[in-house]
Structure formats: C-alpha cells, structure tokens
Amino acid sequence: MTTAIRHDDTPDPFPAESASLAQRLEGGYRQAEAGTPSSDTLLINEQSRLLEAGGRRIHKLGFGQSPFPVFAPAVAALAEHAGEKAYLPVQGLAALREQVAAFHRATDETAWEAQRVVVGPGSKLLLFALMKSLPEADILIPAPAWVSYAPQARLAGQRAVRLEADFESRWQVTAEQLDACCRDAPERLKVLILNAPGNPTGLSPDAESQQRLAEVARRHGVLVLADEIYAMLDHAGAHRAFARDYPEGTVTTSGLSKWCGAGGWRLGVMHVPAALGDELFQRLIGLASETWSSVTSPVQYAAITAYTLSSALTAYVARQRMILAELGEACANRLSAAGVRVHAPDGGFYLFPDFGAFRESLARRGITTSAELTRRLLDEAGVALLPGSAFGCRPHQLTARLAYVDFDGAALLDGEGAVLDHPASRSLLEGIEALVAWLEQG
Image (cartoon, rainbow, N blue to C red; front, side):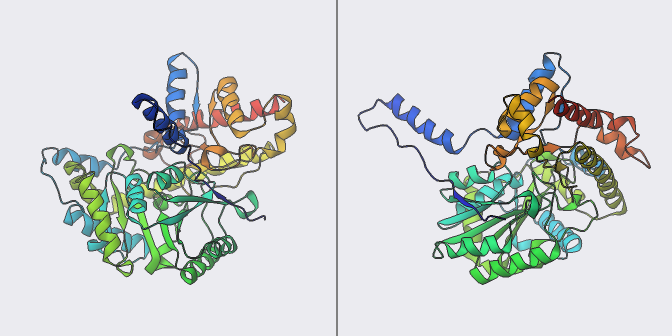
C-alpha cells in the first residue's frame, strides 16, 4: 500500500481593503464555503425527499439514520420528564454522568469516570468543541472518514491532514502510516481521529492492528479522538474500545443517536481521561458554557433510563445487531456476486463498495468520478448513495457509501427469527437489485 498524506489548508484570500462591505462579506463567504460546504449526508437526504415529492420511487441508501424506534422505556421517561425546564449544569446532569460512566465501564471495559464526562447536544458538537479547545494541532483524518471531521478541524482553526487508506487495508489507517506522519513536523501536536465501527465503511481494526496503532500513538504522544458512536452496534457485540489499549491518551465520544435510535434527541457524551490534565477539560467546559449552556433538560433525564443496563435494553440492542448483521452481509454478498469489491461490515449500517471493476463500462457512459457515479445512479435508477469523495477519497476513486437502512426497523424489531424474508426488508433488497441492474446496463 502506498502511504499518502494530504494537507487540507489552502484558504482563498479576502478581497482588497478597498472593496465594499458587501464584497468583503461575499469574499469571506467564499472562503468559508471552500472549507465548510454543506454536509453531504444531509444534502442527499433533502435531494431524495424532493425526488420522492415529485413521485419518484427512491431507494434511500444515502442518509445514515437509524431505522429503529427509540428504546421504549426511554421514550416513556422523556414523557414523564417533559415538564423539566431548569437549566442543568454545563457539564451535564450529575446523575446522568454517573449512569453514562457506569454504562461504559460495563460495556467497554474502560475506566470512565463521571467527573470526566461531558454531556453535549450530540457527539458532533462535542467533537468540534474538543478540536477548538486544543492548542495548535494537526488533525489526522483517515480517507475515507465521516464528512464533518475535516470541516470541523478547519472551523476550529486546526490543520486537517488526510491519511489515505485503501481496500486492501480494509480502509484502516495503519501503524506505519501514523508513525510516518508523526515524523513529519514532530513539533506539532498530532490528533488522530478514529471511528470504529466506521462511517462510511462499517469496519473496525482487528485487535492486533489496534494495539500496534496504540503503541505508535503512545510513542509519539498522539492524542486519539475515538468516535465510538456505533460501538454498541458491532454486529458480534465485540467492539474493542481504543481506550482499552491507550487509556491515558484517548478521548472517547458516543451518544444516543445510533444504538438508541434517538438521533433527533441530540445527546452526546465525551470522556476526557484524567491523565490529560485539567487545562483541556476546563477549556472544554468553558467553551460549552459560552455556546450551548446545557443539553435539553427532559432529554437528559430520559437518557438516564437509556443508559441503565437492563434485560430489556440488552434484548433491544441484541435484536438490532442481529438484523443489521443479516442485512449487511446479504447486501455485501449480492454486490460481491455482481463484481463489486466490498467488505462485509463489522458493525453499524454502512458498506463502502469500490466500483473500480466497472471503470471502463462506466467511462463509456461518461462516468469517471464518484460524484458522477452517485448522481447518475440517483437520476437513472433512483438509488441514493454518497460519493467516496464526500468522505475524503480522491474524486476518481470510484467508491461510495451505502447505508443499508431502507427498511422498516420497527416491524423487524418486533419480529422474530430470520430477517431476509420479512416484508419489512423488501425495500432495501430491491434497492440493491436496482443498483446491480443499473451497473449491468453497461
């Protein structure tokens, strides 16, 4: 594999001082837009809605939202606490932080401490707040990786650096890549973002690879930001938290959006280990106090129930894992049989297919980039995917993210036994067939 590092930090200049205020504003907006375009994941959802409103049948495999209902006891708790109106502590409700810490100690075998937990309005804003609270740093981001990491790094005034992965490495950053990057400008703080199971790939590093990565991070003093929002949806229930291998240097984020089906509740959590000292933690709390103040009170009270381990919660998560495992493997197998290179997922609800085997036939149809591929696929087959370029891959790399969530999660959650023959799965499987049929037209 060829190690590649790319820097994402070339802003456009502002207009000359003699320009009018309107021109200066427009120039400033052009600079901002170059670094912070609208989120592709949200954009594809809106495009799909517009096409559906026009009467088109759209297979929605682009937007990665949990198809499952929110854990029912948490919904009941939300209703019970709907009258809560007081501002809660900036760091988060003490009882919730205690429950979150206990939950992660039990599920991840990590040493979460309640006093080092921060509750925020979604893990997305917590990630940005951490980057903004750091001194000047290189934010090391895998390619592919979630669409918002690089724009957030730039908004935080940090330098985004891409570490390119490939199919052969299962889209994982290697210890050798990290070591090489750390030797480049060693005087700069390095912050490695790791998301496992990953968005957009659905993949996680194996234990040995992760331990080697942790050894390099420790040797070079790298801060690791472990985005483990999909950890509970590891299909085998075998997620290995990065903090198990590098506890002193790993900040971990999670939340309710994926495993609890509560994306719209906007509740995320972050653990900052005591070994990192008080300065970073206090800066993080200070930033929170000047921006979001506190997370919605009823949601925090309801989250106590969501984070309380019980037989009902265990069954709820286990059923999700089983459903996602069966559907993810079926989708991967069908695509592989059609000649698409794709890894079966380890967790979450994503595949990251590589359409490189179809490069010649796609080129004959005027398709040479991943953005062209997904645009034509949506227009001609009604299948919504996101291009690999949205996740930091090079434009001519014919990859895309497929979110296998176009199914009735409530119906499957209430059902029993096999998933593939259930009517609730039909829309997803028809979408995969529509994708294959479109590929075979060439």
